[in-house]
Image (cartoon, rainbow, N blue to C red; front, side, top):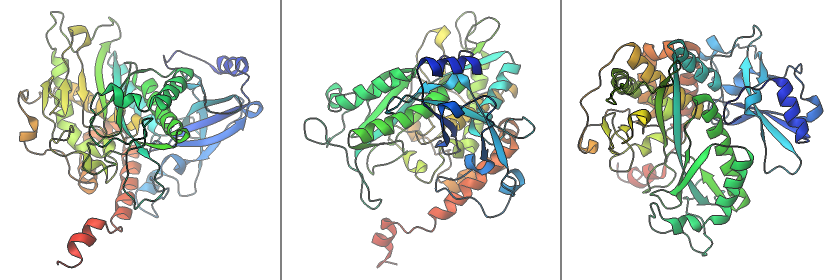
Amino acid sequence: MSDNKTMNFNDLEQWLNERRVTEVECLVPDLTGVARGKILPRAKFTEDRGMRLPQAIVAMGVTGEFPESGPYYDVIDPTDKDMQLRPDPSTVRIVPWAVDPTAQVIHDCFDHAGNLVPFAPRSVLRRVCDLFAAEGLQPIVAPELEFYLTARNTDPNTLLKPPIGRSGRAETSRQAYSIDAVNEFDPLFEEIYDYSDKMELNVDTLIHEVGAGQMEINFFHAQPLGLADEVFLFKRTVREAALRHDMYATFMAKPIEGEPGSAMHVHQSLVDVASGKNVFSNSDGTPSETFMHYIGGLQRYIPAAMVLVAPYVNSYRRLSRNTAAPINIEWGYDNRTVGIRSPISSPAARRVENRVIGADANPYVAMAMTLACGYLGIKNKIKPKAEMRGDAYLSAYSLPRSLGEALDWLRKETDLHEVLGKEFVTVYTEIKELEFDEFMKVISPWEREHLLLHV
């Protein structure tokens, strides 16, 4: 489960029986991070069940559409073949809001030959972690996930507003780190913590972020796949809890004009499997070459990989000057204006924080992306730029400014294709191209306001 302990199917059966589970939600995270799958009666959930889903179910856009033609179908069989789904017993958890005892289990996707489907998000993260394992290294990560609470909003044309707290008032000013502002939503957060506890999620602290109604939850450090599972489940949990308190929770990167965007900062380090030591530090406590090469890899490859962690047109609205979001990939110690920060820590806890990733990113893809960039830095011995000691917002933009530009950059960076898998990159970019085309058909209020009578 949350500690990634090994379980087999017999252990899973015992777990379900002990809790008298009557239904099982069989979940598969798709490219967007949406939970796809099936719900089975407990009696039908057996090891030899052989549950299947069409390949394209994990490879669709956020609108639910698929490309009509093109390279997408060099990877996805045009005959709509099935994938075989296998439960990962270590992911089983109770669904705390269900009326009857219900379990949820995350599944991996395999083809008919028994190989992991290369474009499924969990498969991509497994692939990258395996590359580190081959080097005798274990990545350790700790995500910090921001999100907004908003009043219910059923009309896409209506602007989002902060929800009403227990005082009967909505926030009208920024309340960064305010305890009282968090207490406005005590009943909601008590339920979120209760749900998280029942699901054994690895959550740590809750704080109020800068934006009106913006919160952040921190996770304890652990192995990447298990924590990606937890972020996937946590997003679902927060949305469900918010609805039960007559509000929305959103992980959009930039949901409210004039307010800061929401990020998923990922702290990361590498442990030598044989010794258990953090390889980012030398024996005398100084930063190691591996640490510097890892940062060099992030600087070299993050710009080309941006579309993986800024996956929507909205994502690029977050990445602007002086809004607690980076505009470049400068690095520095204890510097929140840079894209790559190393917090002040002991040598044993030395780590890198990737501040580029948006809260709207698929957690599996996001962690695969940042680890892949660091891996390439180590393998290619890439030296980083000099540390940024001042305000990185005074430096130039070095990240793509739009979804279309980011897609072009990823398509050209073949080093990332090799690490993440060519099939994944093909499917991902084709889906994002489709979403971008859909967005370009929409005329915004800004265009009507400024162009209608003036051009």
